[in-house]
Image (cartoon, rainbow, N blue to C red; front, top):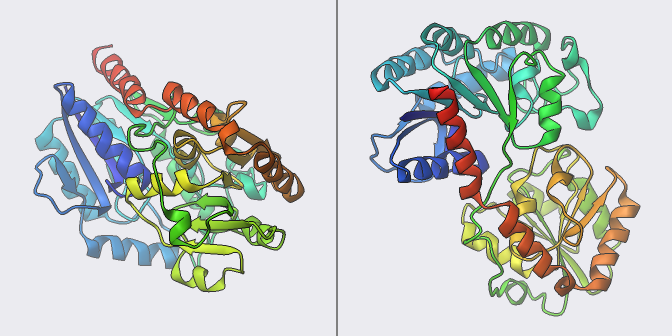
Length: 404
């Protein structure tokens, strides 16, 4: 069996790691797997089973056209046609799509081809972009236009940003036509929340299966760490936040508000902030740039007394899983699928946007102390978050779709 995965990134970021690690598991089982990516990868390794779609110039042109004309997913035509020729050469038995947004592929050309060849397709949704006219997330602003037809997008300036034209209505209608009418398409969502969104969207004619995200529990585990000593935080109660990009949706403002309420023995570390954001952080918050080193992240998680994830909307964030696997309790808002991974004794779920309850939850964790939670967190991770078990679910689905 030969599987072709398609994603915006390879090895880089959460979806890039999922694609590369799933590839390793498929090959370990004796099957073939090629990954085609659009933008970023960590290592420049000569590997015939990893191919890039288009070039950096194609990415840049797609980005510029999106910024001006709001045509994300409707550029990179020639790069996509060249990629289609590679698919013809590879002759995969099944095509596994991940993020098709990311300034690298023309969805119309790709799906016209997929409908013609009638190969089984699995599409893992990591956000809501496939069934909206513009945005990747919408729930945190209370928008439900996507259930009927998008128009006058309130998130036009958010990823994938358009600075001038709002083409959300046209995009919505085109994507609805392009993505429907597939011969053998199965959606996978990492959370029950996203499954329900798909079932309420124009994609509801397709079957949807929930396969939770998994992590490497041999890397993300309680480890000795000198993070507190490095930042002169010994004896401090450390509150941790981690995100690939910090903004309104990820809840950056809640950490800024928390900083005003910190007690003398409390500090916050935020991982993933930009240089500009670091300069603007208030006293009490230490900013750390993004890292793709999982071992370094494990040290940071292990050093924290509590992991706080005030996301206003998310799918099934791996940061929650990574923190618990390192023995650190999690506090998160009841938003999107973020709360689905939290088990009693492993953290606290707070209603979305309730700063007072967030402060109270931190006080509860602090009073109980981390060692009240760490064994439960680790055990929960061992039973529920092992990436190899999740990958086995994918391989079973591959065989079902290919063999029938």
